[in-house]
Image (cartoon, rainbow, N blue to C red; front, side, top):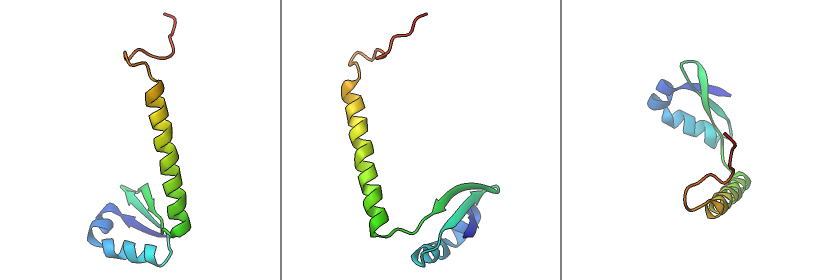
Length: 79
């Protein structure tokens, strides 16, 4: 796995893209700490991400529908 700093990323974005196109993961760091991993995407990963996004959006809509419209908390705490 190649490691890119934020500075490397600014200067060499094309290198990161070529690594992903070649199927390799790349770690991007800031001040020596991991920030994110660039992951190559194929059809099956894209399908998985799309399905996960739909599930997350559905859960968010359901939670918004079940919230009290007055803004009061759904669970009352004792003081």
